[in-house]
Image (cartoon, rainbow, N blue to C red; front, side, top):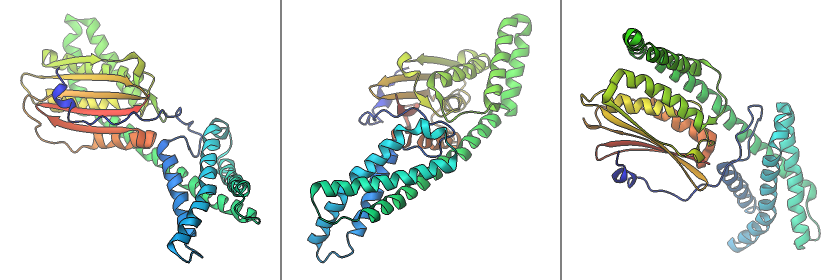
Length: 346
């Protein structure tokens, strides 16, 4: 399948920075995300800018105060994030309340560190050590609370994903078509009939089992293969599948149940409506510090009736929860090709 005309619809951005290994499920908050770092720095700098307004007589005086406060707050914030990220395996072995207390106390130490920066710079002979420590604890408590809420947001999203996948797998026409295909093969090709039932069993098992926060891309590819193998029996020559997989991309972490709904959409909207069938291509490629995943299908009958987008919205939401700004999701229909393009950290 030629994709050159559709690839131009996407603007390849600069490679994302590599992310840390996915967090343990026992971790209350995870500071090892680029988006978290950016938001934390912006939040603290905003607080410093507002605080500098108190007592500032002129705009220039305000700028001087902001510069001084930022000189102390920025290293303290980055230090807090660095320590919280470095010790996340240690933190995951602690109870949830202890993790929160650790984060707040670490904020107090960061506040003292920021004050020490001012002391070394000789800004003032008398420095507010206690006030700096308390401010660091308050800001750290706010950051921990925000990260805890972010972590909790994954739970309903993962639950919705499993329910969506289960509903898709037990969709009556899919189940009946799969069983009818297996029955038709029992006499003429028993081995293939057995393979179809094994693939169906694996899809059910995967849908019903408890999923972790993330899985490897290689695992998702294996599940998508099973689904397409089943549909290949059903559609025969109408379904033409092409795989272009980069072995180096297989270890990338992706949300569980991410790839299969995308290939299912490709079959549903590309192959099913067309009497002559369609092509479905799945490709993965490691590009520096990112992995690019593409699911492309031809649409001989045009884009057709748009679906409700639940599957794609679910994938997009969970991708953002797992990788924040480092996870990208795009979809486009152009020149008879529909393509979904996903980027995740390598």
